Image (cartoon, rainbow, N blue to C red; front, side):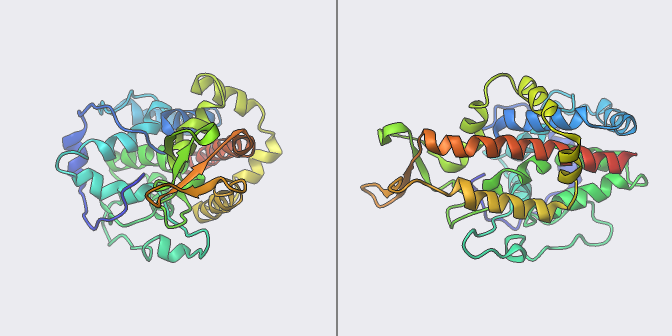
Length: 308
């Protein structure tokens, strides 16, 4: 996610007006594959009551931005955000901050990264909240809405679709960290041997490392889910979104921003460029598996608590 500045707001009516838009989005957080992996793990871990609850909400959703099943809806928030990116930009400007929390890895300040935690005014649904709200605040707000059975079904449906996605975003290390480079978006990446620039660091984590896990997303998810021990799942489910953001930030410091000596250089124009190799991937891939697995377990835990 590259854009960072806006004070625009949006309304629930905008969601209804845009529900039938269909388009091809750019690369996004974890890529579609990563979000599908997380959602597939989560859905397998829902209690019967929670599964009935989420299925009932999704069954009546006519939105065509994504297919209607739970795992496919994991990409909905990105589709929605980008639907008017080249047009009115109301949705884009109104929700782009919700996908990340830029905690500086050298001078961490969670309050500053969350724009001072702007509150929802009484009676304001989370889907119409301030544009400059971080992913931590939005997960908390949408979680509260899912727990509130008195809210209109439409708002709870929006809360569910945002939750399925944003919990995943919260676990991408570069969605909770920055080194004054917009979470690695401004840091170019060279392939092996440093021959050419292939991407930026953020996209490398969103797409390349997930693709390197091998296989279709739902197959990867099933494989990863089988390897999660019950004791691990219980420990992972503890805590709240702010704790998980700090965990992602620590992972970014320890792995995502840790380069071999000489890997980070300047190009002829003075821009930062990093050369990544097999040694970097060897450190990163176990972390990617862990972050995706934890996100799935934690998403399930939130939904189980909301619907049971």
